[in-house]
Image (cartoon, rainbow, N blue to C red; front, side, top):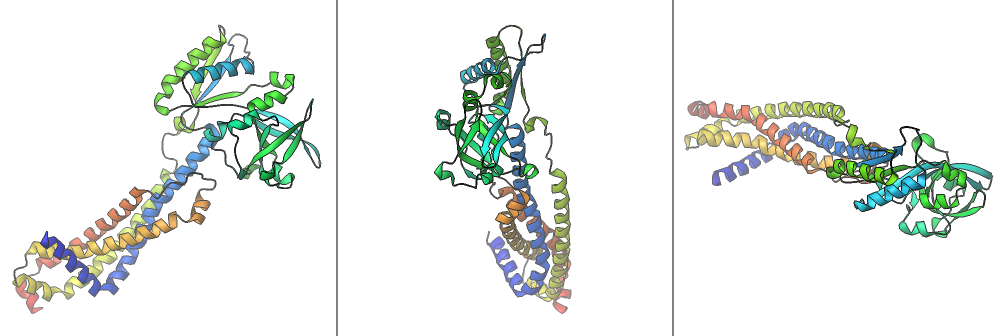
Length: 404
């Protein structure tokens, strides 16, 4: 143990003596480690952003989609009957997250006149199941289902057309129909990049059913979703399908299937990008290693006389080999620490996160494996760079070294 500690101390002393040369050779190593570590860290953020985007479109794993029809006539059960069966069965199996969703067009009275607004009719759980982003205000809560005035979550376009009111003042709009209804805006969602300037909004399913005309209710065919644990999704699929079919009666075909991204995504969609950037980082790392080898060889040649004197006083070949190699290892490890620190600053920079992962809600912590990969790569490069100079130092004959 004393020998190992001594070798480390000696290596650090030699690095300090030749710090200018070592510093120049380690710049490439530090940059390469920073690049390699940043690739892993940014990859984790990009992967999370991609996952969240998939979940907004098709729900979180595992989301079960339920539908029913009559195979003989092609008819579908009315929304109320299927809704009752769906809620009863999911409650029976303690499914905590469920939603009904459908599209409708609601006429809203703006200052410039009556305007039809595309409305998504959903349940409270939809916001969590599909990661709905909020610009201001909040998503629906269970209490909003009891409001006499329906609650609305509008997009940014609708909010701006109303003058961007402070939601703490409980702004309202009038929904026109057979009987005009006053609705309260509780939240605002950002406009999607592909549909800026297009008015849309969300309304709770039961609230819409209460104000919709009978003809509108009859024409509805909502989508039913249940978010369940992935490990029991397959078992629940069969149970929910059987029980809903039993509740609807003979003649109805019930389909329950998963459509979330995890069913179709067989491999990492960012794998090719990670490999490309990682390959460039490895190349830079190898170039930095070559610089470190050159500096180490020059340093060893300058220390040949010193090595010979140490050997003459009893230093073993193993001790000399270990000491010379550790100089490169310690120097490269120090460069690795600097590179990892730079990578952390880059990956956790809000501007970088906002650029590569717009709209991300759950920013992952800096991955520990990224730091370990960076430090491991730096240490490996240091050992590789120190191997040749250490072999040269060991092969030097004592008498020649003293005469050098």
